[in-house]
Image (cartoon, rainbow, N blue to C red; front, side, top):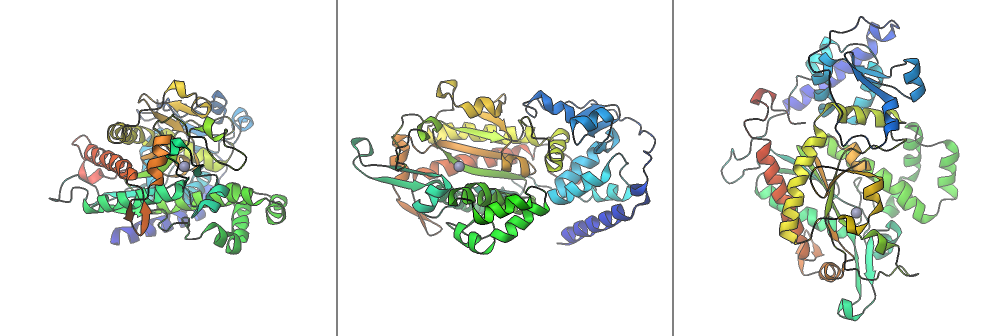
Length: 467
Ligand SMILES: [Zn+2]
């Protein structure tokens, strides 16, 4: 508690100082900083998908310079410069400040050196986590954020959301009608996983806890009735929407667009804010997949044909595409991924997930024969089979190690029958026991990763802050 208060106080003082600092008004760049030994920082091979992004930054003896546009780079107009001697301070700051504060900081810094005061700010440390210090509760002190994908409560909403499976009775379905939605599967999985993690001592945050409600505690209908206006105001204030767009959303948008293109992105931002405020040691983003070529084959009423395809895959941050450095927020996230080891840590965590997932669910890793265009167009394969860098809203906005899992294909005939079968209860929700295998796979990954970050090679106790 004291630590938290100190942390808030430091943020407050630091920003007050930044706002008032005379050097902010000064237009003359300060003398070049001495280059540190580690200026030769190379971007992760999983960060950049499109070479046009090199027009937004450079790295040299003077550190990393970010530019707001390719033209600004040509003209030498720097948006934010981090000197080599500041790399470590920036890494720490980016792990500690909420992204909106970090964005203000990023935009205020420009090419001026960090002050002594902000230098003190980054020395405020997290409490370290060490696996197995308490008998019977090996995860005591570990903070785990769980994000159960999607929101819809029932089939009607799930069809609007576009995250459901339904099949007509046929010999393949054993003459049963099949109907379920992904949001309830992911939520039940998260509750199950939370129980297991808490038994081992971990502190767990669920980004949403109730069926049908998103991260702000609102269902889609409640959001539409009470929060549509404030959402439009937020979007306009952040520069992501014009007044003309806002009036289109108010009067002309179709229900399906309101759900998928306004409510969903808003809810994802709320999830990221909640998770970042919790400052987790790791985050698991829980999803179940659909074999995308099969999605296209649904009939006019939206019924699926069962498929034989089934595979698992998982995503980590990275793979910025053309056009994805056009906003200051995106450039700030890019800088975080340049400077920190969040991509590598996420690959480590996710490699454990893929391993335990194939072992505990029996579902194989996705392969080329599945011919999924998004893996080719939007992702960069990492050195771990089935683990791809992908710049999704949450892999982008959530700071720290994360695993975005897609354990199996819900429209696979065997899985669809199993997932339709609600044969146990968790947190008051009827659920299929098949998800227990999936929850176990995530749990194994957390335990393996928690052990890794406690090894002697991890930072010494006084630096045990985990990004
Ligand atoms: Zn999903």
